[in-house]
Image (cartoon, rainbow, N blue to C red; front, side, top):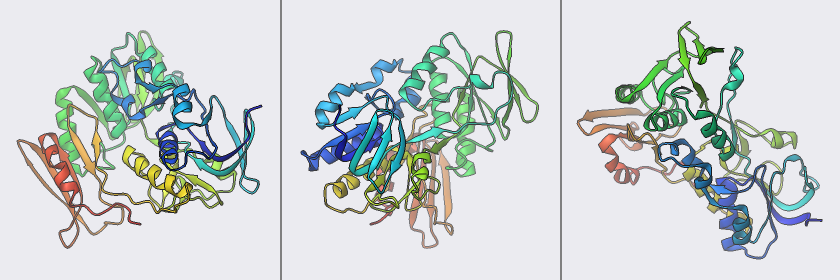
Length: 387
């Protein structure tokens, strides 16, 4: 029988779980550690999924380390293909498809799931989302021989995938209710500029409308949009956003908002249970990006190793992987309601600065050749989250 009592149990083997385990082992080399993975436990970079096609990266080439290597490096037990069915916070116990586990401290790094759209039509079930290596493998297999690709969702991930598909020789249609791409992150002038530049590169935009039906037809699929427009496509990729995986925490009685609610030490509402990554909402902030995960993992590792540490988010600009429209975004804080954008444009691209009433810089957006200003502007920003 495998060991069933551990000092630290981490649920999830994505970037959050593995980064936390690595940081923890730097500080504590002897406590018993278990990682529980619902898949095969290989270590890979999920952000690479949205720009792997143009580089002709196979799923196997995206794997950085097999699970056997991770077990060795982390001096940890790693259980793969394992589902957690329940958490008992009072007994400090997990129920899983491989039996019960007792923990001293528990960390939930269970990620998020692609948003499911209420699609109608006989071919609605043929829509695919890509949020892990297994889905990427299916994506590549089903894409074989397809030319016209519809991407549902003009947000960050949708635009990244669409640009990757375009660069790998496909034709792309991008569909969504937004008035312009990345409308939740960009001011209108920048979004319209992005739409124009990528349109000139080959993006076909169908914005301010949604997909109502997907039906089969000879030679492919027919999409009927909310304004009755009909599109022909060979393949449909949905990138309509992520929903934090909170069901397990909610069933255990933990506080849940948009994500699993945690404080600045990543602690949930239950003793000795923590959360980080795409499933966690830190002091009201849900930031499903790489740099927040890395900062959270370093802070939480210290707390778990006996040095209680508040999480600090420094400025964390996000580089969008749309090579046909280079873009970096450092969004202003949600509370910066009295600020405004200052936008200028020249032959090098666009610069948008978000400043408050005292002209202090709170956020910025740079496009095209303006990206060279990223470091100097980032140094002027306040922390996203202070201790």
